Length: 73
Image 1: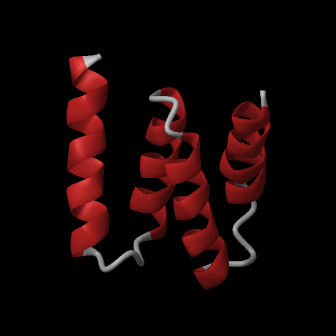
Image 2: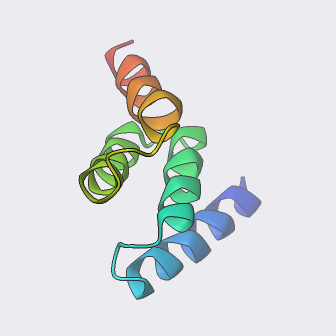
Image 3: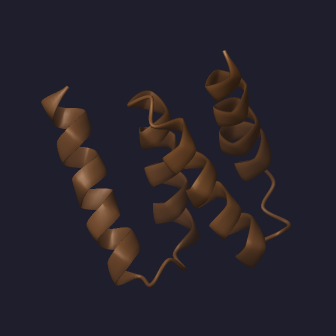
């Protein structure tokens, strides 16, 4: 679990430094949030990415839909 926390921390720092605009970092951060069961945070990241990159093929399916489903259960 420490590796996951450390990884999330590093991605959070990189995401903030990129001014929430680096698609790859945001995507990986959102996936790590799902692994850590931080579904609402993953949804927030996914919505930011979708607003900037509406044609991204995997963010809706891999992150947004999955996190919403897990949040409901």
